Length: 285
Image 1 (tube, rainbow, N blue to C red):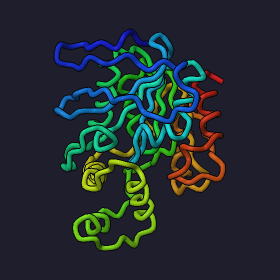
Image 2 (image 1 turned 135 degrees about the horizontal axis):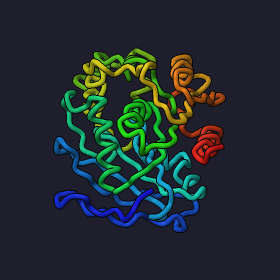
Image 3 (image 1 turned 120 degrees about the vertical axis):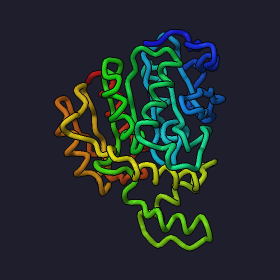
């Protein structure tokens, strides 16, 4: 649960009150971002909806996406508010309205997980449910173990087993960014289409994220150190990573797996089945 979102330290930002859930029917606009400075001096954009005394759900988006793209445009924030939750959204570093450095060294999984933990601390959130998709799910694997006593239930959608973004052809995308050489790899083409669709994306920052993930030596989710709390794994039936996601679910003592019908990696967040089953899971059903 959370208290008022005041700064825990003199140098941290004073955050605005969240937008009450009663203000929304269909959510069509984003509130102004509230910026939090993390340990290495980057600004992380956050968003808050709902009542201050409601149970908190933190939502963390995937690669080349944003809070707006993954969670607002797809109806997740709307339905979480209707279910009585307070929602805190985070634009991961390199995405959305957050800072976008071009150094791969700024994008380890540990740094991304640390950002989420700093946001929760700054908002004075003692306990939160976690919902992450793709890169946000991979980051969540770390977060829910770092602060397991504060994260009672978890949704990890489209979580990759192995190195995140391993299917992205970095050399082809770099050539495209530097001199316009066409990208021929089909998976990389899909990532490019996604990055171009989401307003404000910086391809050089996205390349740095992919490079940072490749350089990290401990990025593989280790089934031997799986989260112990209830975890719902959800992956599209047409997603190439589905078998790996199932294996991770099987490794969790309280893991469950949801196959999202008719969806691939890039459109699964918009599935009504995923949304309804996920929110039911958060409620303990």
